[in-house]
Image (cartoon, rainbow, N blue to C red; front, side):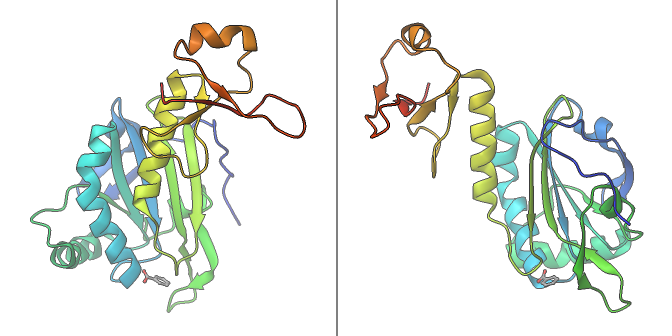
Length: 222
Ligand code: BEZ
């Protein structure tokens, strides 16, 4: 049994849920912001605790980019509230600044295909894997990643992808391997040679290649 697979560009379905900050309608909670929804196998687990503390420390970075974080774990609100005290203690946080969805019935885990059949709890029920969804302000899915339960996520990488998404939304560039904010970018293959001077008035560098094709076109970050 599984839910519908979501692809990049799909409308992210709305849902309602109980969270550590009360009942929410996901779209209403997002308002006009983007969102990062990230799931966890269970409360009171070591890797998840480090991840939730890391995201709490990064909330100002997400806010600067207009992105609201929301976590999901397969336990109830009461359990989340108790666990938040451990996360605050571990992360040396004075407060906890984003909601955790209570998906103890696995309804959202099923709806969004987040169940990991290799991660089974004490009752033999599958837990959620470490899924990451970035949803834009038009409620479209822009990024989807799945990690195994045993590997904590790198949230600096997720911020890097959000920076790339926001840059490439408005400029005719793509970002190369290991790009960071301010680094060189690649001119999109769809940009015609005759349009380059207008779009990139400071000039571009075209790398010569054995194929003789001119597709590696580098520009400072616009
Ligand atoms: C953890 O968060 O540490 C964890 C949870 C489930 C399986 C493995 C690790």
